[in-house]
Amino acid sequence: MNRSFLFCAAVGCFSGAILNYFAGLTDIIYIVTVTIIGVGLLAMWVYLRRGHDAGHSAMVASCLVAIGLLPLNWFYNQGTQGPSLLLFLAVGGYAFCLLLVEPMQRLVIALLFLMVPYGLIYLDYRFPDWIDPYPSDAAHAIDAAATYTICVVLLLVMVSGFFRRFESEHRLLNEYAEKLREAGLRDSLTGLFNHGSFYALADAYCRQAEQTPSEPGALIIYDLDYFKTVNDTYGHVYGDTTLKFFSRVLRELVDARGGTAGRCGGEEFAVLMPGARQAEVQELDSRLRDVLEAQPLEYGPVRFSGGVALEPAASIKAWMMRADQALYDAKCRGRDRTVFYHQSETDGVA
Picture 1 (tube, rainbow, N blue to C red):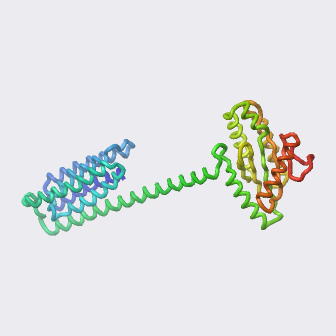
Picture 2 (cartoon, rainbow, N blue to C red):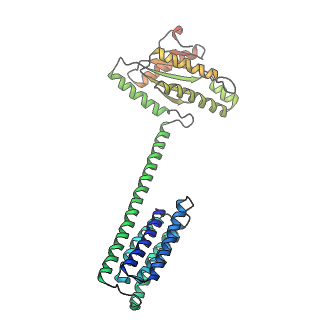
């Protein structure tokens, strides 16, 4: 809005000078002075357009208009009988909104656009002969129409500027709200869905699967092997690195297969694979182990155990219990393997 204000003020100066020159409303001194002020405002506009810091340019321009341009227009355009008060009101409102951020600037602008018109009204009352009358009623009408047009343009620019600002802030608020919502769904360390959000997604899938009992699907629970020992031996920083690395690899593989991964707590992770059958789960599990083996961390590759429950249960709680049971079987069989619920050891995924 700062650049818009400068540009509109400069155009207003040039328009006023041209109008006064061809309509013969004032003498050449006023026309030259207004033109010089317009050139100054336009130079400030060009300066800001080139990317320079705005600084206090809006404040300087507002003061220049309030102390120089508008009083000059007052004396050359019939004082209280002319359109200057309307200009004071429109330009003052625009400047006040433009400088809304700084309290001290708001105070200065308010004082300027209150005290300067009061002073001019007083001078007009005490020294009425200082102000020359319009040369004709037609000139008066032309000046009033031109001034009204300038004020309408200023108001339109101001309103459009506020709409743009509102839309920009509304967009930022929506982005922040989305980030906050996403942060509430994600685990802060790994970026995977947290326990609550993953549980809700899996529960919704179970309810949907009730409508189509033959729909396949898999729930996998992974647990990093001997993670407490890793933490105690190498420190929590290395432990966090291990969790983040495993989560990143797991998320990439699961996302590529249309699944959802979550961190259920500590070193335990869960994966929901809608529509997946045993062969697809085995392929995912095998690929995960291959990637982790090929990219060992400082103290060796990340190893894990897993439990898989195929076919959604009547409730997410029952489905989780099946996967937990399979995970328990995997740990009992020596860890570093994945076992399917109610499958024999030879059918498990080593």
